[in-house]
Length: 375
Image (tube, rainbow, N blue to C red; front, side, top):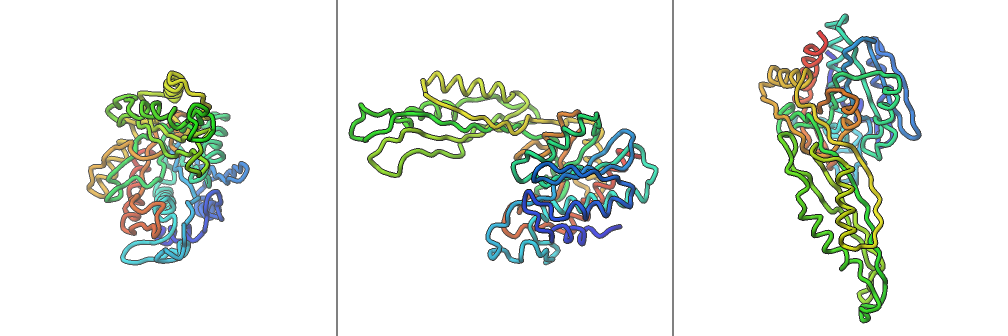
């Protein structure tokens, strides 16, 4: 079997800070091509995407992921140079080891072994790989899915290789994610001298009761799979910097992470109703980042749970916690979607690392899932 450690090192050594790919997809294609995968390059503006498929029949099993990584931060504060992957005490250190080049390496190793063992497997296997997951996610997976939908090319089962695990690889499977909606709100007032309150209209004072109501509102109570919807203010800015000037505007950025009990339309209508009721002079720009999705049961979830148990002896927990992923673009097509990857404790941090033995387990888990779905 291909060595997952070396494959991870080969990928991590390519400094593919979003939206750059830096040859990662070419490297992956060089492994997949001899196995019978046909590659299609889908480049949209600054983003490189790869759709690579072996076979033409259903069911279509897809490995999805991204080759881009977040910036390293100050590289001189890393234990080892972030793009010079280094092994120490059973770990590989480097940017992208956990998020998510270790998963990509495990996918490649599992696929190669599976195709060699089962060259006549049923259905098809595909790779949907983007270089725009850590960035604005405008020209990545969502554009590839649009292309596939236009030609009615449907994914049946999809594993997104995001780092889903907590303590041991496979202890958590993300079988859904909350929706995400961001509001950029500006409330207008009248600027002036603080000593003449009758001549000003303070937007900070005006917005405070509305923000308090938004913060204490119970949007829903969640359900068996999702916690209650969360409203969080992330940024507030007002003022000129002077202590004697009432500002003319206040800018507030907030975000909802919402369950399947709600939709973005419902949230937008409720927020704007609250703001209007407080008689604010406001403008708001909405950014819809994706609807919630859920794969609560079925072939893929059962295959993943059983494979983790047989490989690692772990009873995997199904979870919808955490942020968003590209799974939100794939699930609406009708695909069964899960996220399954290594531990997420060091992702986006200095000295990101992944445990080699856990990557080896991940290869076996992916291989077993392929067997259960395609043989």
